[in-house]
Structures are given as C-alpha cells and as structure tokens.
View (cartoon, rainbow, N blue to C red):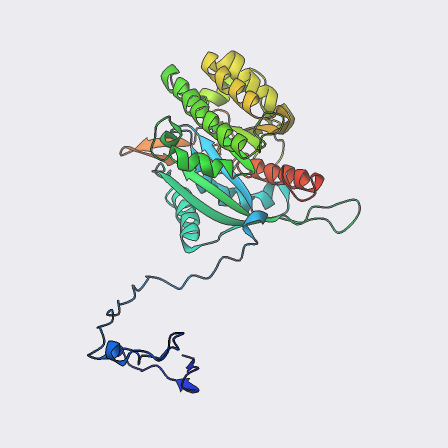
Length: 382
C-alpha cells in the first residue's frame, strides 16, 4: 500500500501492517480561527473506533469490468411476450442460431456474455438444447442479461463496409410480469422504455382464454410504456419510437405448420436440409392471415394494438421456431415425420438436435434498422 502523507508532520505516515485491528490514528491538531485548541477537551483516552468487518470472499474467478462502450452507445433489445410464448427457449436458442448461421447463410455471428452470469446463461441454455435435448424452465421474475454480439462485415458499394459489433441488453421476464397490477410490471416497463428495439413473441396456440390473456398482457404494458415515453417527450408522431420484430412463435408445431402449409404460405428449400419456411417478404401477409383467418378475433386485437401504438413502418414479421423441425436420418426434412417435441416422464424433450428458424434474423434486422435510423438522425436512434 502507498504511504499516506500528513502535512502537519512533514513526513510519510506508514499504516500498521498485519491482520489484527488497526490502532486508533494519532489525533492531528487543526488550526482554530479562535486561537489554540482547548487542551482540556483532549484529556482522557480517545473513543474506541469501529472494528473492521471481514470482507466477503466471492466464489469463482474475479470478474473484469465489461468492455462495452458508454451506456448511450448500447443497442438495447427488449424481449416481450405473454406467458408460455417461448421467450426463455428463444434466448437459449439464440447462440446456437448464431453458430449455425455460417452453414446456411455464410458469415459467422458470435455471442458472448458481458458478465459471468451472462456466460453461465449461455452455457446452460446450450447444454440443455444440444446435449440434454430438453427445454429450459420458464423464467421467474425479471432478469437483465448483457451479451456482446459481433457479426460479419457487411459489404458496401463504397468504402470498407461495416461490421456489426454491439451489446445486446435483454430483459428476460416471465410473461406474468406484463399483467396489470404485477409488482414487477413497472420495473419491466421501465426496461422496455429504455430499449431501442423490441422482439415480440406472438404465440398463436392455446385456447380462447389464453389468447385473451395475451392481449390483456400486451395492452396493459403498452399503456404504461406509452405514458413513460410520452412524459419524457419521446413519442414520434404520437406513437412509440421503437423498432419491432414480431415473431410468430412455434412455427414447427403441427397446429401452426400444417394449416400454414395447406393454405400455401410455406415454401421449401431445394438444397441442404430442404427446410420449409415462410419467405421473409411474405411475413407480414402471413401474420395478417394468422389473425384474420386462422386465430380469430383475439389475435386481431393483438395485431391492432401493435399497429396502433407503434409505427407500422417500423414493424417486421417472422415465422419463428426456437428448436426447428425433426429431420430424417438423411438430415433432410420429411413432411411425414417432422414433429420435434416429445414428452417423457412429465418433461418435454427434442427428438433430434435443434435447428432454430428465424431466431437470429429478427435480431440482425433490428440492429440494422436501428443503425440506419441512428445515422439518418445524426447519431440518435430517435
């Protein structure tokens, strides 16, 4: 430890060494504007000082300061959805989708945690999906996770191009938190208000009661979110400024996939695993069909709320599956046997290794839209 310097003694003062309690420091006479200090006030033993408190020893390796840029430079993405819409599974599948992006699209994406807890979250989710072939437990409460996301360089006609490199601040919250009156709802809404982009998981499965709950959770949070952003002057033309990726979740489920295929929305690749998908350019029309013709009135309420509170030009739509389809032994899609999920011993498992569909793409698209908006506004996303 460096020596301390006492200006009244004109020499360095070395603190005592050793593990025991330190003796009380020698009093230093301070000049008084009224004259010399009263000697009687210093008679008797000095008062006992506070005893040192042993430091708590954290477990594990020391954690370094995150190497992110200033807080204002972070791209924040909020993850939103009603209970049982698959938010936790989506997050667990995100690093796997980043690894598989090179195989299907070229150009690798890398995701790593900014903290020890975030890295543990990544590792545990990957282990569950790939080795145990199990689904993660639903989230309890609100958890903030910061991940560093780095992508391949994007080519430009002029200049060296841009390599996406940003921090993903995710709020992994239980769907019940979005409900009116939940004690953590205000905390979650504040996190969403600070976000630049939102991923909204829309689950078209379930009975009418659950579908109504989805709308109630959405509308309750939207009204509070709008009030917070309005009070700080952040609304744009009366709407929330966020960019939104709406993901129609569980695309692999036969209750969604089969009606979509029979209605002619699905195309299939001719190479590789020959995976089926909804073309990106038809994502919005597919969502409209899902609300108008397939799911019904309550789904239309969800659609109307999203397009009322957000600028429709800032919303993109995707058919998403966190685990993908079961593939045949030839590692190709087989329409006769594509269901991935099975149940055993009261738990749900995967029959084959997961192949996420449109899990990373909504995030890539959000970052790109936010980046272009930031450049257009001279360094401010809105």
